[in-house]
Length: 367
Image (cartoon, rainbow, N blue to C red):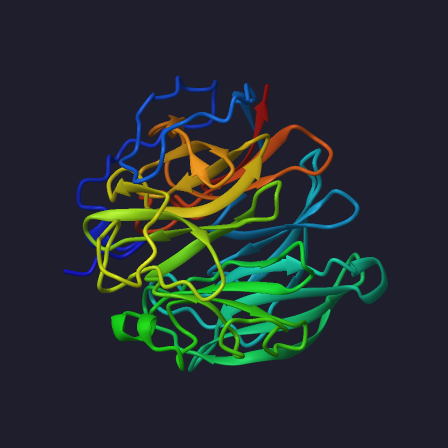
């Protein structure tokens, strides 16, 4: 049986109760099943409070910061893009053309602001189109999006397993997560763009130093949607499993993360095991970010924010916050200039059980 990130198959045991934003719920001290050493990072910074920054969203998906300190945020099904200031002012700045929904998890997904935005004014989007998933560049002058140009096409799309996260790495190259498009064989096929983490130039070409001389940076992924770098520049990714385990992986170039041979840890030669794994009811991980010695992972079906301490390449015992308090948590990103996170929900669709406009952007303050 296929387990799907936002489908009813993944939500058979979902609680119907989704509390409105209020005071911070007590964190559940729930450890995840893992294969790495459970040593803490010795960092005391943890979530201390949560407040609503903005309301009336419908499936906000991608979030990327502008140099001004405002964020660009995409809505998956409306194909609209907004700026949101840290004080909560929300402004629509455009709609990405050529986007198509997939009847499931596809649509307008990741967004990445160019590291050189002050001079090139470029913003990059990952989205579903009529026949594929693709990455496009647009110009954003601070008020309006224009000049849509595709830089990468031909990523297979499906109703589910579309990946969609898009971020610039500390090396200046653009990284994208792709799902297996509900064809598990794609994940092990080095000639397929699906079931991969891709690394590319801003023209959509293979970045120098890629392990196979192609766009492929790592393979054997089912449906990765979380992507971030720690303070030492190591790449981490989170992905949906099938029916047993979701994964947190430390990504190295050319490594094979096992799908569909392995779901979670296994002893198969040539496969790289996750640093942490959760049962599917505890996670369904989407967003991932790093702050103050820990990874923060937003869980959809699990309806909680996981904090995972990191020491070098090892992870400490995960701790869950806000369990079932705010519903399905999609994206989490650190806030520039603040010891805080922004956290978005995905409740305003058939899977979250809430009407359009029910989603929110929260600010989580860290101690």
